[in-house]
Amino acid sequence: MTLHLSRLLQITVLTTCAFTSAALADGVADTARDWGLIGTWAVDCSAPPVKGRGTIISYEIASDGSLIYRRDHDASDLNEIADARVDPDQTLVLSIVLSKARQTRENGIAKTADGSIRSVFNRGEDGSYTIRDGRFVANGKLTPALRKCD
Image 1 (tube, rainbow, N blue to C red):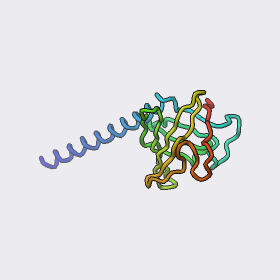
Image 2 (image 1 turned 180 degrees about the horizontal axis):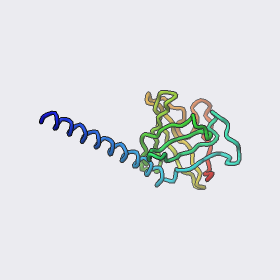
Image 3 (image 1 turned 45 degrees about the vertical axis):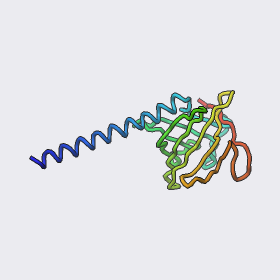
Image 4 (image 1 turned 30 degrees about the vertical axis):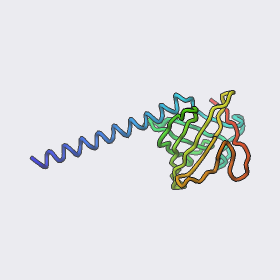
């Protein structure tokens, strides 16, 4: 009898975890959709993608409901977005799991007056920034505005 109850409890816990995980994925995708992020974005939508350059960025909802980030239409450059939230200043903050780099980075995206988007920060779990205050840390240049392609 105890074995039966133990198995029933295990099944209940696993089922609850599966539903919770799916609900969280839906919440992340819903946040991005409501903010207006879903789709393909580029500085120049007519330019061809250049693998590894990040000239075309896509935010897509996968068949399982999770949110993914893809660069340059490259099937091998596909990353899960584990969390999404909108800060009080309307910055969309994404927690992107970069599996190839074995790290998670937080990327803040702001809308501009003309409807394009710009990265305003990008930081690692260690607190290191590649983008801060809308500028690349390495050279001080402003991040480019990306326009929606589709």
